[in-house]
Image 1 (tube, rainbow over the protein chains, first blue to last red):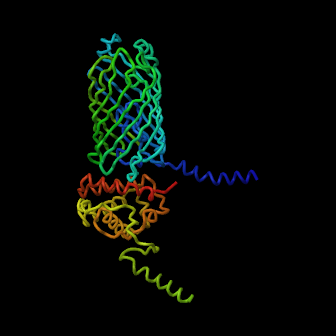
Image 2: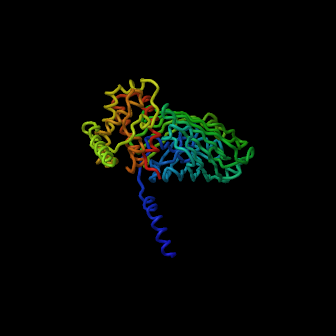
Image 3: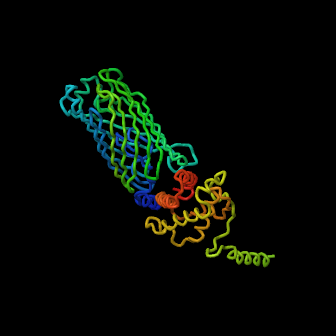
Length: 289
Length: 162
């Protein structure tokens, strides 16, 4: 009897398993996977979006690799990372950030070209909605994310008032393409105590706990391959020694073929470690499958 | 009574092929209704004019289908399908939705794609070809997106439901 039940169970589950392994690459419309955000997740550059990384649909696995450079008057931020998207449902991402203090390092007493580094491990789950195809519904695509960040300069972080070199952000994102207007909008709530994205640790002498921060984007499709837009992202102001401001950018993202996206932006990160007006060029190249 | 019914049935079966437009294969009978187009038409004819009317829409449909038939990702889906009928019903559907005042005589999107096993990636490939065909016809980008927004929700009926 048990044997018979097992056979019946196998017959019921095997076709499902066969279907599960029969994956298919590609299938997202051009630019509807977003680009790599500074934290490695699919987004707009500064902001995390509810879209899942990679070209895949619910039938497959996709992913991307990216390299980003942000050239500021007194600093340079370089990030390299990748993400995997599973069935347009789950995203796993990783990025390594290198923050070069260049000559500012001397003024800060750290030394010429002192480097702050950070690793960000991200996971995102799409919980509802379809940003792209459900054009008859207002329900946006909604995703929850967690980003665990590990900065590498614990001693300096503590010396300037930071509470920890490690931290975890929790995010709730809503993204919708209003196709009839060629407009994509995103709004994300981030619970974080990260100082300058976490590069200067988590929590500080002014504020230790996580606070709710907002990040949002609006983008307009100019041609099927070109999107222009702007982003805004608030940040906590935890450290007494240096004020931290909201960041914003204006960007253009160009799809090159089916597998590459080039993003160029003018970004303003505000004051960073007492050096004001950190505005400059953001360049990012993403390859995806 | 029985014989009369059989005779009526035979007559109706014979009559069916006569209803089939020239060059098309007969299909099982179904109720005709504009509602089968699965979309609410644009209010006036300005989208129809943006698509250059009947001639422009015919070129867009042909451009989309011809590209699809030679695309190895999706060409197999069209094998054994009545392409003549597909071109006609798509012209009618686009005309109806774009405010061109046509009557749609095709089946619903769910009926027309039943058991075809179409995946999201197949539909995305078709949309790419539609976009390319609209570009070739020099349809304004804003008009392209307005039509795509109207077609996009059909995905729920076209793609196999899990």
